[in-house]
Amino acid sequence: MTEFIEHWIDGASVAGGSDRSGPVFNPARGVESARVRFASADDVDVAVRAAERAFPAWRDTSIAKRQQVMFAFRELLNARTDELAAILTSEHGKVLADAHGEISRGLEVVELACAMPGYTKGEYSENVSTGVDVYTVRQPLGVVGIISPFNFPAMVPLWFFPIAIAAGNTVVLKPSEKDPSASVWLARLMQEAGLPDGVLNVVHGDKVAVDALLEHPTVRSISFVGSTPIAKYIYETASSNGKRVQALGGAKNHMLVLPDADLDLAADAAVNAGFGSAGERCMAVSVVLATETIADDLVAKVRERMSGLKTGDGTRGTDMGPLITREHRDKVAGYVDVATADGADVVVDGRGVEVDGEPDGFWLGPTLVDKVPTSSAVYRDEIFGPVLSVVRVEGYEEGLDIINGSRYGNGTAIFTNDGGAARRFQREVTVGMVGINVPIPVPVAYHSFGGWKDSLFGASKSYGPHGFEFFTQEKAITSRWLDPSHGGINLGFPRHD
Ligand code: NAD
Image (cartoon, rainbow, N blue to C red; front, side, top):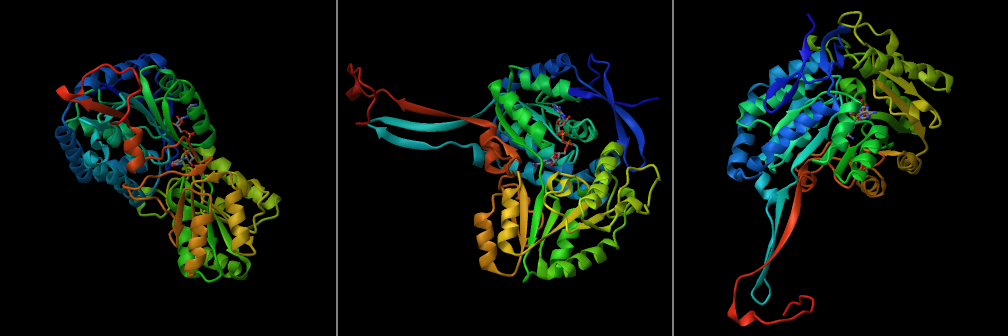
């Protein structure tokens, strides 16, 4: 019998009123493991209303009690990481060690959410005018919507809902329909941690569910992570409906290797950041910009390291798992032909990989393409798979121009032992997150995460100080307590005397 993954509304599993559903695969086996319900607009409305009902009591719950829930959630999540990692590997395909890494980066944000009072407290100015004080408080927005992508089914929801909830909001989360179980698992765990029903709701689905959230008048904000075309659509639609929006988009991350770099370190970094999670990371390195004098050596070192990588089922101690769907696997594999047609050298072709796993899995081995022209779609497109391109450059200036000419600006890295060059790079590059001899510069939870250009729509990054600002609105209060010396009629604009 087919297993259905249900919505989670008002603290209970709910099938909803729609008969639409979608397949969920185990990508390492290539088989459908369950089906996920697709919410109708009415189902989304039921979830939003549950969140709306839960809001007044949650907003008025003391900071201390909200913190206790977050601390309890942190303890539970820490104790049950293996369970969640197994879910991630079975629906996403990433190897177990990587699934644990994803959870640990999400846990960081939960820990940050425990420290919420320090980020949401206001400011106070005494006696701004005689007998008058001004102070600010930060208050929750109300019902907030979160829409997340397939590639981090636990971490991306954890970037947002712990902060939103700690700050007193109630949430409707719409996870990716490709790997939806992690979100429901997290919502159940929040309930176990003491979160009142209705504060965190999960609805599954596709564009129908997303549009219902974007259009719902009760939803005050949208936090989105996904591909650039959808991020732009979300930003424009939700903004025109009067919502606060943060919409993080796609990426094409470059790693610039200067001639004085430690080439072994650079080769390790390129392989780790290029092929980890089968290249399905928004911070994956997908282009290595290698200066001509070192390019041959660097390509040889990368190739040698790739020969040691084991592709296969993520539960078997392999290095790299499958891609998310058969269609995505075929699309990514298609870029190898594009590379050949565009005159690049295919140094390692992952299409013939020998896997440690079921033959029907969505496999593509690590692929390395050298001398990629920047006019090629292999360079321009976000491939989102295990295809690493090498573009050869004359030196720093050409490398910087290429990075700054990209429409994306999520992450980048420079590999060099020259502090002056690194400092110039950090100032001149038009990218939101920069690594200096660090290939995947995902900021720690108390700094915010987000790119520039087509990698982020809206003014707000995720988590860190931006996260608390996004999920709260500031109110400024000007107060005077009765003082007999200050009465009288004065129709002029208030001045400070
Ligand atoms: P996606 O854009 O296809 O889907 C993201 C979410 O949007 C999902 O919940 C999906 O159901 C929904 N969606 C899809 N099509 C829609 C439509 N037409 N209308 C309304 N909603 C729609 O992205 P994905 O394939 O799940 O994830 C991979 C993408 O996410 C990559 O581009 C990656 O770079 C990006 N990403 C970015 C970051 C970041 O921080 N910038 C982080 C992770 C992933």
